Length: 402
Image (cartoon, rainbow, N blue to C red; front, side):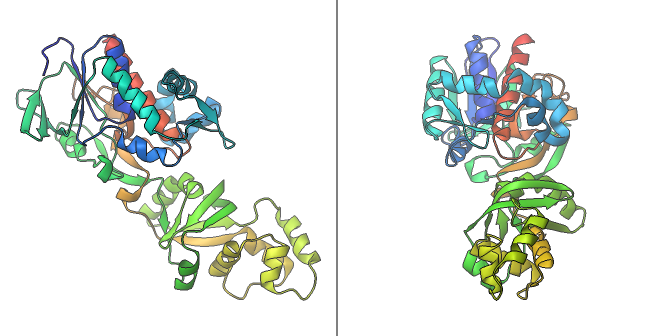
């Protein structure tokens, strides 16, 4: 390793680590990025399969509450590198962005690979060294960074270190959460990991799961503990997944962890009030079968109609008011979140109280932690990547001021 003064080690080659490396190297600091996998940005490339939702266009007063309990701690960090800054950064790489109908922000290519290629070229041009297949194992007794590499264990010195090691979801892409034991051993509090933005399991009947697994529930509203989210969900053999349920996953997970029932209420006709739906059902031509009534008067798809029977029983009420109530509230008892390794992101990580205002670990001077390895969570929709970029940028700028 170079003996250049003020060399910074960035451990983790995802968005949080790479933006930190970019800012530091642009300021003239020598930077080495260490990544355990054979290539950089693997989770970013995975996100690109869905179009690469970089951020969201909503105002910050609506944006910041998406981070729940961590919102106020993240406020100055995201204000310093917000959605507009992230869009300008992507534009600067030749990957101009657009706002979709939902307010989400995407590169026009709807791909991650062109952006990642341009980004890595910029980093290389700024002199950033990349050390792949270097798995961080902590520190040597003398305080050097310790890595397992293809050539065996190696030690490397650094004047400052930025840890950007990710959470514990999608371990095959490099985020295993192994670092938690290392930091706990150094006196850093780490909240246990839990699945965030995950699907949830329920006991479908074999007939329903066999017929409808893999099909989307469109134009629905899901409610839990007084909060309602409109959107879509996907029926899976194990239960439900998709954006609407991801937005409620923190509350659903908390209820299950507390041993409480997690009854998700699904409104299968959210564009109609219950009185309006009752009126439509009442005015429907007499003598129709229930299936025809659900299709023509209530506008339910075959999947929605069968979900109604799955939750309320095969013998649905014929009374218009009772049937409308059933359509507006189809209850599903969820039994467990999907396993951690199948979640889009994770809750848990380094407790925010163990970090100073610079995102430096109080127990480890000169060591910063950023990105998803911190104990915050947010729904999908651009909020995850935004906070990863923002925390990486904040730590890099804080380091430059030190």
